[in-house]
Image (cartoon, rainbow, N blue to C red):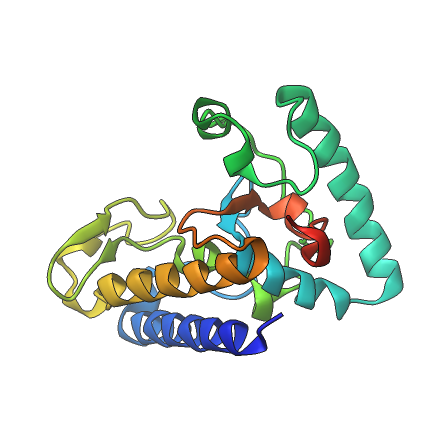
Amino acid sequence: MNIEIVDHYRQLLTQVDTWFSDCLQAHGDKMACREGCSGCCRGLFDITLLDAYLLQQGFRKLSTARQRDVLARVDVRLQQLQWRWPDFHPPFILNHLSHDQWLNMPEDDLTPCPLLDEDGRCLVYDYRPLTCRLHGIPLVDISSRVFCDSYCTLNFVDCDPLELIELRGEFERFFQREVELLSQFSLQLTGRSQVELDTFIPTAILIDFDHLV
């Protein structure tokens, strides 16, 4: 595994965290999102294999007992997923399913993320995926381009966050860099450069990166 690619991705995630910290500093009184909140950690989220690789690193740092608890929850979740999508099997890559299958995710799914502890805190917070770091705030680029106009209903209850300049970030650059790194990562893993290679958070820790092809 080319650790340099992973290191570059972690640097990108740190830049995203800096943006989020700046948002908290500017408008923290209007935001519920912060470490310890798990209101949005429900249902299914698709993440890239780069995120999945990092998630595994965080998972392996947990105690044996914690890992066992998480794997038990993951096993239950996997059975539910395979009931819905019988073709979903190792290496658990969503792109191996038909596009209509994996995009048709249940919107009313409130199943907690298996990587939450008893108090709802993320067990792998420093290794969490990009989508977890972006969740809860509208994603508006410094150029005014809107990537996502939705946000957590616990945030900004008395104002329109789309009008708050301090919330804007370099999302065009963030996402372009993510695509570049995923392309390099997928080339190394599969021998083909791919810009879409996804799994679910529950199945991320089950992927065998040493025998992916």
